[in-house]
Length: 265
Image (cartoon, one colour):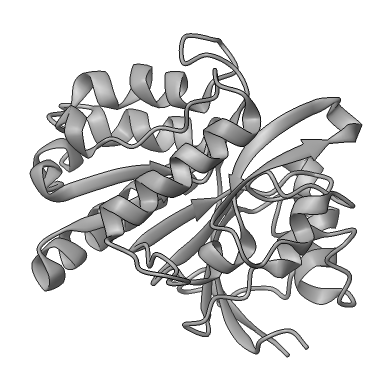
């Protein structure tokens, strides 16, 4: 049975406003984790909304670049395409160009997935990196302070695509997941790792997401077809940052705060 979770969703009028909310949340979460535990560990995704968030975080005209304690941040990835780090499709390359090349985050605190390697090798090496960084023993699962996820219009998240073998894996931390519908391999964190995050956030925008958002959060339990339904954090809390179009079929949020809640059982 799925875990009960309270979903809090914040609706912005534009995609730019979603990115601004995401940058503010990133900054608050990293500051809080660094203060509480001395180190903030964040796992990020690719896509257009993270790109806009990264640009804001690195913009010297914004307050974020000087507010984030970069020296106490470790940055990880949720998933990666099986391409070299210089490839236009690389999540790492996008992050490097929009954020990492512009902020003082030490290279030793950046943990990329090596998409240029054979998929199984890349997955095994990233799992080893996680175990070393988090000092894990045995079957322990890493606890990220903050995880940013996207959602595809097919209901996938990270690189957990509908009807793929990776949906069933609850033992490994990182896997190579074959995606037949795209005729490719992806490297991805597994659902148990994503659900262990202290704060888990979906960034969702655009008309192509309206229907799938409603299906994932208001439809019947069917994670084989809608893998985003697997995201039920052990904290019991899940946050959505959406634009108004993507949120159109969710219950209307409070008019003053533009915030709503759903209880998933």
